[in-house]
Length: 492
Image 1 (cartoon, helix red, strand yellow):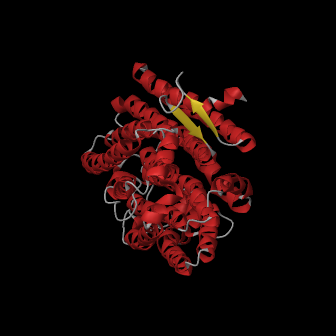
Image 2: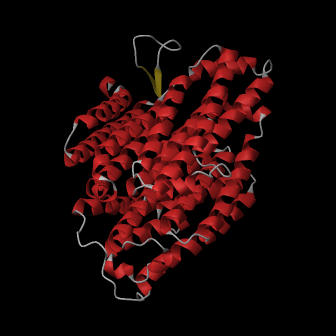
Image 3: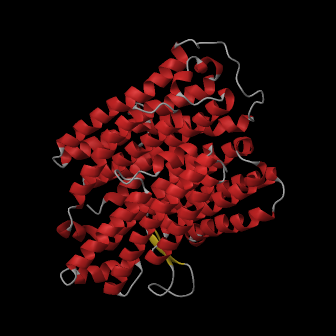
């Protein structure tokens, strides 16, 4: 339908208008409720876009009266619709959880500020994945960077401020790389629209090979820093571990994915397969992805605090995505895209569970979790499901990711990638499963009461239960998602 075709633009407007309205709201409860309503509406609209793309295929949407390349254009294909639905759907669940938790973690005067930043961040992430114009993508990237810094620093303590400054420095350098790359390509092509830029680059690849090579390298470094691609992940552990629960979930589950999709759109949309003729992209991604899953796992294994361990685990999971992309075949690409959904769900679940643990027992050291499974059966039960998915146990969505990447590796003749996957799964098990075993099968050292005497509202458990069920359902019946994102792999 023609109305559904305009929903991507409506979703962006909805988030940004909501962000402007938030400062006018005096009640913290109404502010939180408004964020949840807006994200829920956006989630419904995004799922309708997915159905529209499934039935009608890719389409272009002119936002203003001028057509591309002069006007702003949104490009809605399989990858874009899929990514937008992941961002809005998971964002909705985080917003519902936040209705019961945010006021317990933030100073009261910062609750409305947090919701303002949250909605602006959701709108900018959606803009990154659907825009068909590089300059507008850069604008959305900057909004995402600033608001991401904001939802870390809004906690207003020394650790979060320090992590914000570190994140801001690295993010600014990365933005500079991306902007310089866009300027170089604009100088060659005279266009900022992705479609028109690709057309002119195809014609001029033999005229400006070094400039094209430099631009590609700058894009990889810029997006690599922002998506925490090893070894450009230095900012991530502090940022993710020092933020409030919902901010950690957004940063790991969604923000990293938005930047990854942005890189995919640039590398495949602007450069296309011609990039492989002048740039060893497959080898670079394969090397960095392997380093991420192995070294990231070792670093996670050495952590003593839960949220910091989960932060390093995010580095590992991003490595899986880049390993899938490095194979440059349909199966590997399917695994990479599927892992965008799997990691968004699973890591969000784990961070929300970590927030509950911290709230109830006031501790986050892994050695202090003995027996808490009996005191917090729901929280630790869903944590166990998320942990099994991270390891890649069959019947969970995490298994399907590794299956497709592994099969893609064999198909491309890179059998050693499969070995890397097996080793990383064993390392994942080494730092996830002891937590579950300690929680359910060991007795606490002392019979301490939970620190918090106030129970969280029931709806804070609802998002975690929904995500846990989705992980199992997608593990058993992945075909609807696989068939949809499989339509995006025909480029290989």
